Every structure is written in structure tokens, then in C-alpha cells.
Image (cartoon, rainbow, N blue to C red; front, top):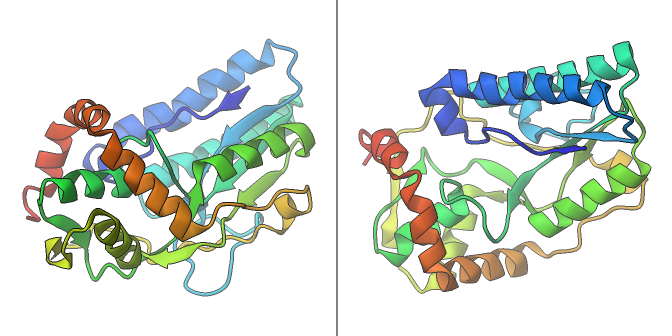
Length: 257
């Protein structure tokens, strides 16, 4: 079983924390209970680097203390504890993956890259939280999928594995690349009030998964430019997908724009 289901948007969890708890914690509980009835070789639980909170310097290992700063990351941290408890208590072969920021084609357009591509193509302002200097480690979805395959095949039950890309970039650098690829001016950037509890930097150590034979292969700039171009070339898909979250965006950014 590969458990990827989640309510994964931090802003949505701030607007309404209940759905994050119901989906990420209670949903995980339901799957773990069902898994107890099956003869599984592996229950791969998808977590996030956000469970460690903001890391000002250095890199968090898998045994670093949790310090979640949003309802989303708190619900994922709780789900991690729950999943591990099923290994300890019931012997369920749980393996936990904690990747960095995923990006790539088909990402739901409430996320930074597709959202800003969508808005930039329409010459709409790009709302950047605070100074835009928050640092994220960008992991291409193909590298993430390869990591999950390695963990299914070689991961040790009861263990957690960070999945870093080694592509730490300030949000502004990513946003400027998006604008450059689309041929749009940086004047579209609009700094807005930062969100509560916004983590400044995520940094995770990947020694454990590297020891299993995995390493990221996709260059950040090449992968990001290809992703931006994919969204630009699939505007019909983006339009249909964006309509599903349009009310949320209007509510969330109404007081910031």
C-alpha cells in the first residue's frame, strides 16, 4: 500500500483546520486499520519535511524533533506518530517517506508553481508572502517517485526516510524563473502580508535514503523550466483544474491583494 492521500495545502489548513485533521490523521487511521486485515509487504506512508518545522541552519535527520507550525504539518506529524505506532504495536510493515517540496506536471494549481504560471499568463499580480526569501528544497515528482520505489523495495519497516533534492532556493528565485520562462515582467510580483507561522527554511538530511541507492537526477533549473512550459502548454487543463479552487483563492487572497 502506498498512502499518498492528503489535504496538502497549508493555506487551506489555516482557513479550516478540521479538514486537515480529518483527512491526514483520521484518513491515515482508517487505512492503517484496513491494512491490519491484509497481508502486506510494505505500507508506505507519505509524510513531509514540514513536520520538522523551520530549520534555520543545517539539516534535520529522521530523528530530529518535530516542530510543526501549521495545522497541515501538525496533522502530518500526528499521522507519522500514528503510522509508527502501528509498526510497534501490530507489526505492520510501515515505512515513512518525508520529501521536500514536490513540483512537476499535473500538480493541482493551488500550489506555487502552477498558480503563478496561471496568474502570470493572465498578467495578474503574483502574491508573494512577506519578503519572498523563504527557502524550499524543490524535488521533481519523477525523482520523488523513484525514491518511493526504492523505499518500497529496500526500505526498512519501522524506519523513516527523508527525501531531499539538494535544490534549496528562495521563493523569489523560483518566481523569477517562472516569469523569465514565460517572458513576463518582474513587476507582476506583489509582496503581501505573510501568513501566520510561515516556516522560513526547510532542510533535511538524506543520508539514509542515499545509502539505499537513491539520489536525485533532475536539475532544478531544467526541471522547473520544463514544468513551467508544461503548464503553459496545457492551459485548458489548468483552467478546468483551477476552477475547482477558485472560491478558495478569492477568499484567501482577498485581504492581501
